[in-house]
Length: 288
Image (cartoon, rainbow, N blue to C red; front, side):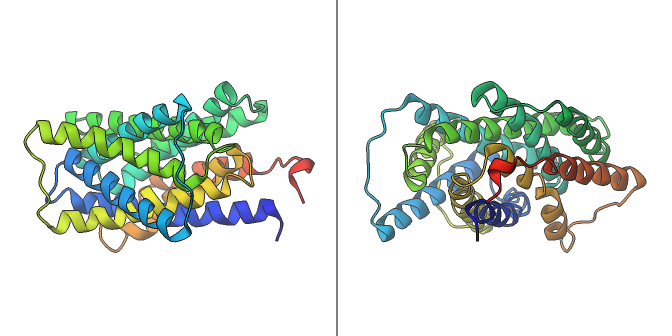
């Protein structure tokens, strides 16, 4: 297997694993607040990362690059906004809106990583935006508007986090990067939660759902993503992540009632078309 195909496989597995996150996170809202769920998510991810570092005997290093600390802040914001969006919206809607990630990621890759922007990508990007708007059938009430704003916010935060990660990965092991990433979130969210007087470690159903979510998205999913990112371009990795709504829909069908309307079908078709369109042009230098 070529290195590029290996990277594509790792990122495909990352998408399948991380698609469980919206469903698990929505369940956690039954007994936890968005802030508490965010803290436990980061804490469990930190413990899992430390365990992996210990088992693999990865050398601990002190990272002085400022980008790593900024990465921790954007990751922390992304975690909180994701839970807040799920507090107001259903997991399928949040997962679909989250596909604006690809738009943010491509723009950030051009602005921050100086990757070349192909003008032919403009049309599929517009199709992706239109498709997401169609599948996200909002009524316009206050809760939906807040949820929509939070969903866009977490999407941008994670796109920015992963862009910064691409910068740091050239010199930092992905497990150490995860350690700093989650450690920053635990400290920030823990201090806020403790200051509000709502910090508690009493086990409940919500914490169990958060544990599964943290393992999928905050640990295994990101680990696969960061590892795969070493073998393929940032752009290709994010095109694969655009398939996330399909997995979210499949995982959600047994537990949630989803109305398959003509607008939903049209929007889904546009999103898939945009993904296929952007995936077609492959540079010869990337083929092994």
